[in-house]
Image (tube, rainbow, N blue to C red; front, side, top):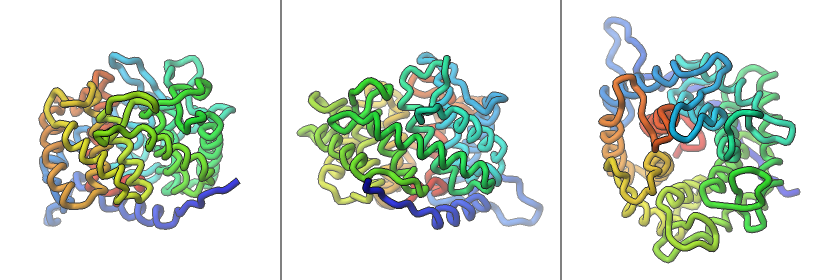
Length: 357
C-alpha cells in the first residue's frame, strides 16, 4: 500500500510557541506593555474572543462532551470536536494554556468515542450523520497530537487516528466520496470534504494515509465542478452549492494547489455568492458553515484577500455575538455557532496547523 508520510516536528515547535504567545487577553502586570495583536485584530475583537471562549468552556459537561441544544439534535461527538478545535485556536493544548483542562477533557472524550470499527460515535446517542462527527474528531485529534506530552495518551490518540483512517478508506464510495454513515455506500460533497480534511490532518500528524484514497476523493470534487465554477451537492447533480464550494477550495488549498484553475474558479464563485449579511446570501441557510471554510481559504490566499475579507466577517460576527458570549449558528445551536465563530476570529493567531499559511 502506498502511503504519504507525515511531518510532525515543525507542528510541535509552532504550537508550543503559539501556546506561550497567543492568549493576548490574559491579565497584564502593572507596567507591562499592552498586548500585541495580530494584524486586523484589535482589543474589541480580542474581548469578543475571550468572552466566546469563556462561554464555550462553561458549556462543557463533566464527561468532557459539548452537547448542543439546538433545532437539529445534540450530536455530541461532532460538537465536542468542533468546540475542541475552537479552544485549541486560542493557543491552548491539553497541557498548556488557559483552556488546557477543557482541551484535555475533550481529547479524552473523543478518544473514548472511538469504536471497534474505527468510527468516532457514541452508541445510543444522536449521531445519525456520524461521518461528520468522525471527520471533525479526526481533525481535532490530529491537531492535538502534535502538542500532547503524555506518552500513553499520545499512543491512544495515534491508535484512534489509525483506526479512523481505516474506517474512512473502507467506506469510500466507488466514485470516491462518502455519505452520512459509513455503511451507506453513497456520497455527497460536504461529507466528502470533511473526510478529506480529516485525512490530511492525520497525514500531517504522522499517520499513514493511503494516497489512492485522497486522490480518488479529489477526483470526486473535480467531477462535481459546475460550469459556473461552483461545486454541486453530489456527482451527477446540477446546480452549485456555495458552502460546499468554499469547503472544496479549502481542500485544494490544503493540498498546496493554490494555482489549480478549478480552485481559482471556485474561489471566484464563492466571492460572488457568499455574503456577509444576516441572510447569508446564496448559502442555502448554512452561513456559519460556509464562512468556516471561506475564512480558511481567504486566509491561505494571502494578505490581499485576507485584508479585504476579515474585517467584514469580523465585524459581522462581533455584531452577532450574544450577551452571554455565544453565537447562534445556522439554526443548529450555540455550541456550533460559537465554535465556528471562534475558529474564524482566531485564524490570525495561526495556531492550528491544518489552517496555517
